[in-house]
Image (cartoon, rainbow, N blue to C red; front, side, top):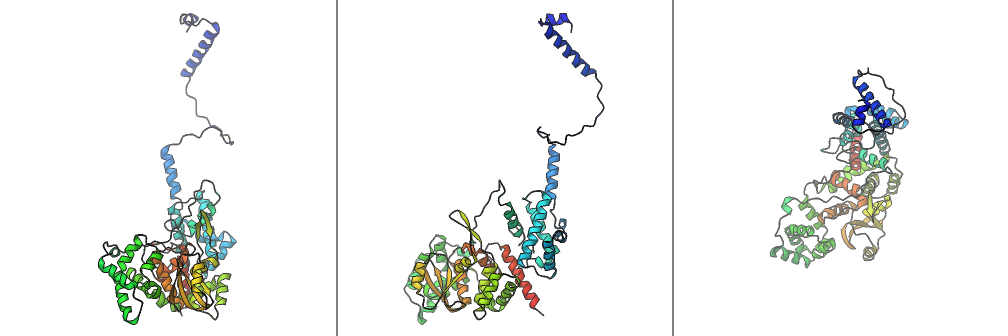
Length: 464
């Protein structure tokens, strides 16, 4: 464009005409320039403040898929090599090579393996596939660490469905990290009833008449058989009351024979879960006590050692029960919004409290704040001779030996749909799944799986 052209379109100022002319020439030169040869550009090593470049979505998806696939197969983990990388790991290898894996070495094994996993993926939130792969790698490469519970694949106590030692270790190392949601609420197992126990219309005239008759008939030789028969006939009615929210106290008022005929607890339990009902009575003394003591001695646990020494001349069955409560960790639970860790002594007192002969039972129950069932033993600390089940400020005589008495305490939770004391979840989970082998829908705690495996190992090592 010429000067005349600029004047004709209304650009009167010489300075403006000059700027426009230069700009047009510059554009013309760029249009006719040949493309430049590629050049290498040096990248400034200093971090840039510019926004990151946009990536191809397909490339991002591929990278994400690669990250998800990292360490997702048990063969991706060389557990022995991981352990050889530290002195603590070498100690674990020594323990595993001997065919045993005590709790301290098992904890160290989990810590080292989880540390390896977190380091490799670059964060503390591995996928379920990665956690399960690590769990399977541990038991595949070290068979002595397997879970030998019937029906288990072997790795479940390390990780399965959001639970296990690996998951618990990850939660521990996340403590104090920002933007981490913490969930601490736990619920005790609440078993569903079998289908044939959920019928309606059971509170007919016949059932109510039998309930009323039992309420006013003290147990005598001539009435015991009839009470047992009527009690079975009204079983479904009791379950109907419990589903409707009737409290334990009210149930014991409606069925007072529970308080002077404790065998009725066994009858109701047998009607709910007949399979394995007698396992504790038949197997505890000869099948479990010596193995539990053997496992406890191998742990190097001072609390277990103290219990064993205390019971040198005492009741070996009670000794083994206290050892199980000590070997299985007390569960953290919520109290007024705060997570509370129960002490070992506190956990034991939620299972059994022992007082001298002559203790005023009525005064004892009136002074107690606990409402969940526990045993009161009367007599010597290491060999009580009389036992009562205490619940809701009510005492029920349950036997003269701890095996019979604990059997009724355990079954009471299920007969009356009562939750376990939260600090004893693992303790009762052991008896439900390992000893009684109940089929109600409730998972097995990883600590319980580990103890079960140790007991089986103790049994096999004692065989010729």
